[in-house]
Length: 619
Image (cartoon, rainbow, N blue to C red; front, side, top):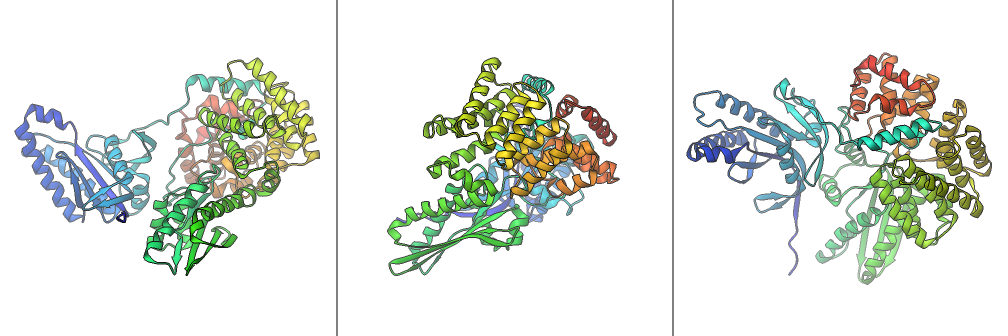
């Protein structure tokens, strides 16, 4: 028996329930039920007024869908105001209060009911809401801002049970404004990191940002997925041309296969099939795809079937450059469909890794590895390492163990083990610092003895400056040796950081700008951090706007860039922009000690603090 097609759609979900219903029942069951029925009648009338549809109820809880986010929000506000008015009247023998959560997301339609994460998150938002309050998701906020006069309070990223989402309170009253601080690492970790930064000869914070990723909302950004340093890829549903009805499912399977294959690479963000089919259903143009979801690349394909022969055509499109960057046509027999899926997926992944994303380094790196899987592990190690937190460190360690098993005691693995040890010391994860420093020296020496290229002298430069000799002369000699042997983006970034720390600002700027010119994207904004912090030291403010302005609202923008950018805007007289960026910076909870740690070898930290306090209080 053929499986029945699952019907999906994007819906605006409204979830509400009674606060403390069980206690009300225990106190007076009959009166509670009587009052609940009156509140339900009021809610039903408002649903009808705002074109909402009640699709599920659990006695004291109600789930409804709406045709628009504005309609759902206006209904919620009117309901809460009506409940407040009712509770202040003599008609309410039991004063019932409600929480409301509103989300827009993908759902599965099951007869008259709606299921899926879209509904689950609406319920989590309701649980997060205050008594008599309304909490909405970022997607709803983006739809209704500018279309309503309501005030919102950004709560940042919240996690309730297994769901993580960006939430906003709709402020019915000023007294409802509340603050959620982001979950931070333990005080011990911060203390250790601060101490290490103070001991080290400085500045590499720009390369290895302790808290460089915080998810934020910025009102100017209207897309459902904010820009980030990780390229976003959409796999559009593959089309079947000339096949039978039974062949149509092949396109769905091929689409899911591509998503699964490309998701192996941590260096990109692959959107789910829900988004793929939503984009197809709404026939979005390339401009709309880019603007609504900040999509950088799309994969488009078709499978043409004629008799017993088949042909697959696949394109990789760069939406920013408005061109096809890779294309492939392959003839195949239908019985070999799974082999073709794997082959096409690997070809796309190879193009992304070697040419499109890895830039000038990709082809040379790939030559170090015998298999595609090993090369993917290598790239995934670096993607995890750049996140620079204990969780990503642990994941990177597992990838490194796999690489060691495949290419044991090689220059590549010793180089990576050196970088991993540097991060271990940086994060305060070392249980024996002296032993780890000895290992670091051994890994660096082995990498140089086995290969001795620019990457190996770059890791020597970083190791010497920040963990071993703490000697600028030794570190600069190593990085200059690296540049004589060659360079890539990472080597240039190390050079920029080392030279900035050792006082050669023009040299730091030169190498960092070269790094930015060589990479099609800037993972984790590492290179941009080096340039911005160097320009700030040099007081070249207009250039900071030019370098960072385009991406300043990226969801993973680092704290140091946000802090400096807000000060620069203020100094240039752009007070409104300065305040907006300062608010984003404040969401990170960064304190004075952390700011000092960004510039441990100069008084730049104190200067930045003083200038930030012109915009607003740091505490």
